[in-house]
Amino acid sequence: MQPIHQLVRTYDPGELIADGIVHGVGVVAALVAVTVLIFYASVWGSPGALAASWIYGIGLVTSLGVSFAYNIWPRTPFKWVLRRFDHSAIFILIAATYTPFLVAALPDPLVLANLVGLWCVAAFGILLKCAWPGRFDRLTILLYLAMGWSGIMLYSRLHDVLSLVTLMLIVIGGVIYTAGVVFHLWERLRFQNAIWHGFVVTAAGVHYAAVLNCVVRLQA
Image 1 (cartoon, rainbow, N blue to C red):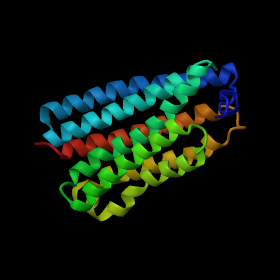
Image 2: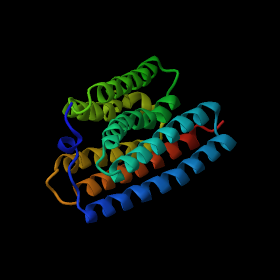
Image 3: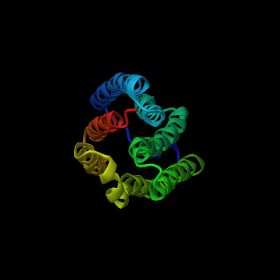
Image 4: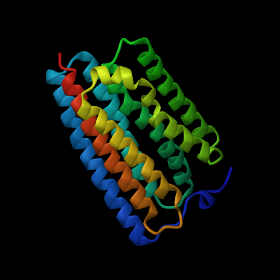
């Protein structure tokens, strides 16, 4: 197992402050947005929409919250533990974000298989991150991207149940996430972490809009 100082880059105070601000905005916005989403689904949504909203909401807040804790935590042995949780939470976020869209297209067998498959891949990714931390980072980035773009295979199914606005927002969010990976890997760039997390928060906001639009269409 590699020591934490070989896996976590040292950031100067300015970079840490910038990253903290980005995370703080993201966490607060997520808490407010998820509260609105679940309230709406509870009052006007169908049971499926409500369940999907809870899954998505928990995944979003957990991912951003864990990322915030990990990135502001000082370089101590516990940061190594938080790193595992942070990278694992990304798998949860991707699967949770897809859940409302796929629930909207159920009971299509192919959609159901994709939904189960996404959560299985997420579980596998979490196992990699927790059991072999730091050893398969490149592989897990490929898994993130593969999960994120897996919906392309279901375009014809999702096109029938989701609005054009929702589909466009899903794609735009995916493009923002993917573009952000460049900065995630560009470790020599100053403020690289804050920029990467800015892409994450922006893409998450776009996908939230897509989820909200989807839930509105799942009204009882």
